[in-house]
Image 1 (cartoon, one colour):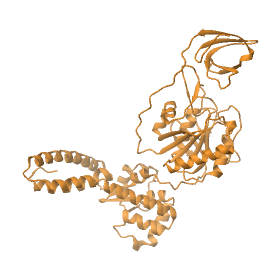
Image 2: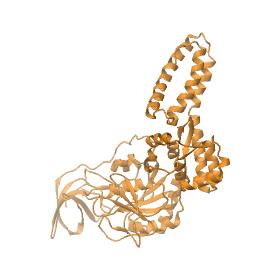
Image 3: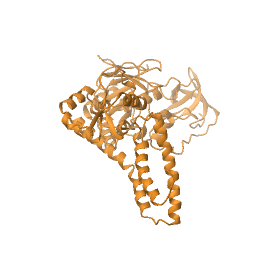
Length: 475
């Protein structure tokens, strides 16, 4: 038997069959594993080999790729992907056809680059075992790692797992972990080196669901034999019902929780789910707008965050109307509502023909609303909203600090003149932003907070300073 190495192209002859393929890594010294032209792998007992012929000497693979330079997107959620082994957390070495574990975030992103459009990904290896070797001791390890990731700020967790015992792990974690974020277990029935692999679409669907405002332990796998839909199952009501089918996982005595289109990244919920109390700060920031010159939030946006119906907010306001003066709360006009609908992405779900105009709450009104609702969720959400209001206000502080410094400069200083010239250029650019905002809002009074409010306030202060130094140019 000739000497051979990983990557070599060989022909193996046994008593009944001849095999040709590329040598792959083997976990068993008594077995030779080759990748055949068909794409399938074959493991051959060395004791049954009559002859082995080297066809071409291959280069032993050396998997070294520089790390990816990916900046975090503040508009996306942070999702942790924990690897325990299994087919789904793997990448293909296209030199040998071998499938290697994908442990790091870089590995996962190289294998499934679509993940970058869904969330900020953090990858971590917890275990590297075959799923049939999963035991309660390992369940405890996974639960402890989940706790660490939650404390580190993860908005959702995806656990890559072998499929044979994934439903047992999902059930165990459902009883072991009490978390306020989604925990999604995902696997693959076909390995990443096969054209029919379900690994990428399952992982895309799992990451998409991990960004949702739901909580609990779930399993995601293909919903049918094709690639059109994946199904989300509750961790305590799912089991594997077939050894090779891609849609092997089924909800028992229940329908799946949701259908996911992995290509459009759309989710259709089939049952009611408990919502998470974890607040997405970006969602709050996007819902704050300027109406009548003040920063406000609309009643239905607050209802969504408070996890109550809009009518509940309206009822409490009506019962406690003396607590909501006009500088705390006011009702939109029809024109203001139409402009708000055209500018706010979340307003697409609002039906036309409302019986009453929505209510707008100022910062003080939001605080008062949480007091009258008297719920734990409303209190926690209101604290996050108040912090967001303060954060947005503070964004203008550095600009006003510049103004104060300018006021202390010498009037006849050449440096002052040059500096003010530059200030005028900057504010002129800001003026263009303001004019664009005016045009987009038809001058009704709604403007995005950051683009408009800071411009207006800063411009007013600068006008005074420029007049002091004798600048006649109007900004």
